[in-house]
Image (cartoon, rainbow over all chains, first blue to last red; front, side, top):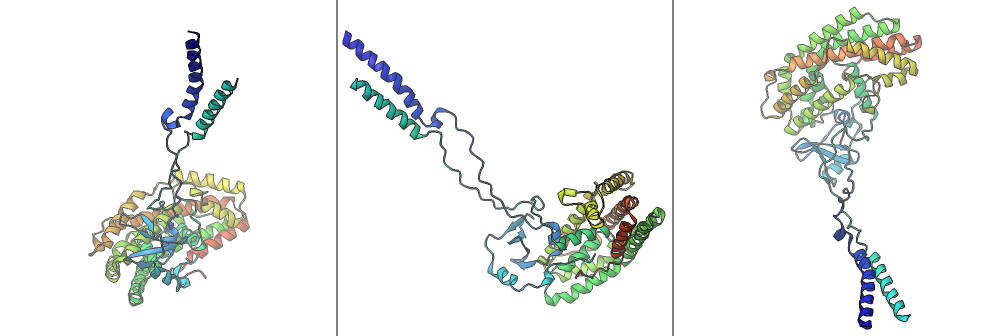
Length: 110
Length: 306
């Protein structure tokens, strides 16, 4: 009788100690609803040429469309009229760039 | 005693394990990849070089011909092939010839303004009479250049026509920004016309504030307003037609009105700005401003800055 009581007491104490430990060991997402995902890493697209740049700069023509060298990228308008750019500089355009003269930019007399 | 120590060790080990498991950690999110670039003008990196600044200054003072002028100016940087260059240059020269009456009327406005600024008093009646001539001459430009636009369409390849439409749109937007309805202090954070004048003439903050307030009340009282929607509609009509395989400028219904309204609004705004600025300037500042206006008045279209 005394032995049984002792075993029950020990089991109760062990359970009381282990329960919080098991709870703490459970992955957080199993305990609570997952938090909202963090915002995706910010992708900063290069800015397309402003209007004043387009108006004063001579384009190149590549793949049947005008393209503008601006900020280190070649920009073109896609079929929806939105600006897009070549991720890798086409060799034709790289070659063209090597032969530019100062007529490419227009300066309006003031 | 030894048993209690063992239990303690087990519990400690379990607690350490629970912390080590770290249930609150989340996998890193991979960076997204965007396929489109940001819309033009939305980033603060629209660094303005001298060429762009000169264009804005040009559009703040030259409004004659409206879209016809934008089209002619677009030919400056179209980049046509050598075999087409002579034909396109000839068309541009002919367009400038058709724009000459409007150009002359505008020259009279700017010269009259320059004289008034130098004297310290602008003759409103004289300036308005000249401004009316700019509007009237600009209204007639569309019909006058219709055949030239048809020739231009025939002379250009499709990519060149696309480029031309892009450039006309760009000129229109630059003109719009330079001649917006609001106060000319600091439009869009890029520094407006009054800010530029303040720098060039060495105006004090008090002079700038007085000129700004006067300009604001003058524009509020102006009987004319520019309808940007009309311009956008004409631009769309011209753009889609000009890119097409066949084109007839005579079918563009809104050309005359669109050109006249650009000329009227732009000239009105220019006149009222200098009317507002003149009374607050010193004699030396007025002399400098008059010289600047005379340079604009004597501007020759095919003349590039050196």
